[in-house]
Length: 404
Image (cartoon, rainbow, N blue to C red; front, top):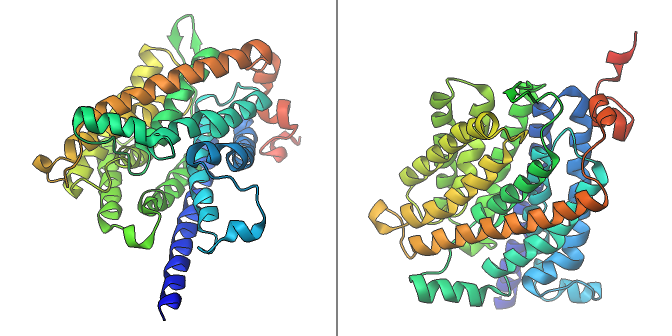
């Protein structure tokens, strides 16, 4: 009887994490449709192709290199040993955490859309998913976390807390994207003689579909970060919902009903709540998401119109800045003073969040500078004018439009 119960528990954990992995895997369709809806028609095939290729390459490099770096476990052994006595739990844990690692190139893809060469970005994504991201992951969640987390705890009274990756995933991805966007420069015609010429999105329904797919999958992203049935928390689920709703409502008011900001507001709220979703009160989660949404609405406008940075989907403010806010907010709203569970330090959250910014910026600039100087990063003018769909993939998203 005891052996049967143990087998049932282990099988339940495998199934639980597998379902979470599938939900987060589905989020990559959300990344794809969000980008497809936000770019012009001549760049839609490219967006779909980038996301799927980056996912596939990330799977290979994270399996062979990234996961062993992050957690000290490799899979170069017979299948019987991979299965072990826990029904292959480590394999589905790899699948689940792969979905996080693969978010990095998917996030970057939205910032560099419409003018980046295909293979240089695939190579950059492989470096990030296989080396750069796992190294930072190992410091916060993985095999090398004892040293850094011990420093935070001894210095500030508590370790750095990032339950589901506001910082480890989203902040890293968004701040890695900034150097890429800056090195590429703006799309042709985006800024003319110092004046902004906005390029409209091509398909609001696709953009909205991407947002909805991401939002639904996010409950796997957050709730299943418990990684076992015994660790599941209804607080994480409701906090995710509250933050999403806060993001939507704050964006609705701040943007005066703009559908692009409205649907990205949901994502802003969900990004912001990842770090503290297991700590904060639902009312605190609502305001974490709402404030994150304001960061995106005003941050995107500031980035585009004041700084004149052509970050197509606004991934730097959406993932980078809001991811940083998510890490810091866990140190504020996670305290007992604001109805949270406590056990978190504001200074640990602030320091850890800023450390991620510095790490991502340095890594991003080094990788993209080398790629730009050795392979070239940007399409030539003729190819960019034609659009990456035809110049790279030799097909248009709507071939019938070209038939006379």
